[in-house]
Image (cartoon, rainbow, N blue to C red; front, side, top):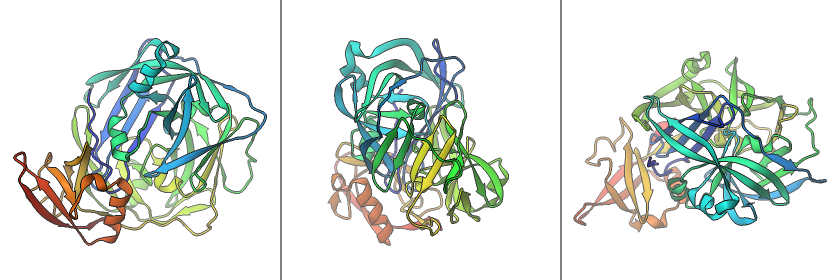
Length: 420
């Protein structure tokens, strides 16, 4: 199955992988949703893993001291360099919203016989019950600095689209369950991952909250306008806050509107965004009226919020600490967009989605149209973060589109506030 991700052009792409229970020895179920959040011009790839049997968990080789691994934060994704079975380096995205790890086909091929194939397969099932499968392997060793994790179960998944979105090769995802025997800190401001096999979190320390697991995922209680909501702490999500549309807290969302579509294996589904007319509190920290995505799944706090913190997890004691230097509440500017979502391909962008009720929808642009220049400069000169800065600072953006015959035409679009 070929996945098509719109370019994360106007916010950040999303990779949120959730495994409720371990991988089956025979067959498990992986419900996959490709979310094209072109309402903000970005894409999201949501992988929901479910199964009902047991799996051999990875094991950690103890160290006497804490280990610090440098990290890179790209479009709010937390990326570390790792070795696999002595090969590499490889670039891995750390995703606490996934309790399974994934590797690219290229990495799996490099491992050869060192990567132990299993009889397991992941069945990818859409909401309409159409399925595809992912092969499963076991990584003999996953090495983060001098920290070594052995026999790490993983699925094989093609990260080519995501790599193009981010402008950086992504070789895999490290799921939350890899760290189940250690205390670890995802420190966004300092851009580092700290692994402490002997550390513990003081339960009554400032910023510490209960963080209990559901099938190996970190869940914490947050307050949303006086409502208690159990949320997934998801470093694989670009959103600030995601709420289930059936919860009482969802009634506090104001100015909700159609974004673009949520593209699944079975077809497109509508997507709704808005602004929460209340604050979100987790421990002593306050998030002031964040933008919200409405969904049918588990509520979550994503990188839009987490990027402000050093987040420490203690899976053994089911605790989590969030630390930040500033004491002021976290605030969000309006979400700005030209109303187009793009799929980034080699040397060009293609329109992947058009946001309803925007000037772009009223133009002659159609999904599939090819964009070759932005403000007169070729699209390869526009990495993600540069384009985001353009949208934040500009009132209009000029796109040059090319027809199949090579004829070019300019289109000037206003930058509008989708979520005020």
